[in-house]
Amino acid sequence: MRRISLDPGTVELLATHRLNCQRQLTRLGVAFDESAFVFSYEADHSRPCNPDGVSHRYTEMCTRLGIKSHLHTLRHYSATELISSGVDIRTVAGRLGHGGGGTTTLRVYAAWVAESDRQAANVLAGRLPKPRPTSRSD
Image 1 (cartoon, one colour):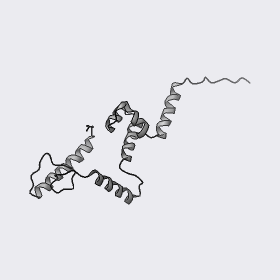
Image 2 (cartoon, one colour; image 1 turned 45 degrees about the vertical axis):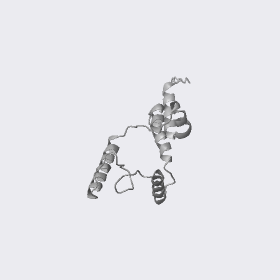
Image 3 (tube, rainbow, N blue to C red; image 1 turned 120 degrees about the vertical axis):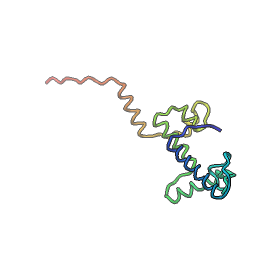
């Protein structure tokens, strides 16, 4: 189990979802319990969603949209985007739950990104001294 930070927009979305769950329980005449699961297929939110069900729904959505993907791909996407945006490898590894300083993260999850490679080329070029223009004498 680990904790990760969430952006304000995601926190707001989750708070709205929780409020909708509380309203649903009120309509059903069930008191909201702090231990209720916000993501549940049960009307009273007494059990969490089955992770396989979430994966299945994601796969169905991708099929409908004509996207070739599965839920685990989002981990790879997240790692690649964070690393290519300059987030340090230790933070990315921590978000993914990887120990060992990020070795697994780099070896398995981070894809090569052409734009990052272009940026790397520009960084290196900026560090090298520029050749002096040669004068031509005729």
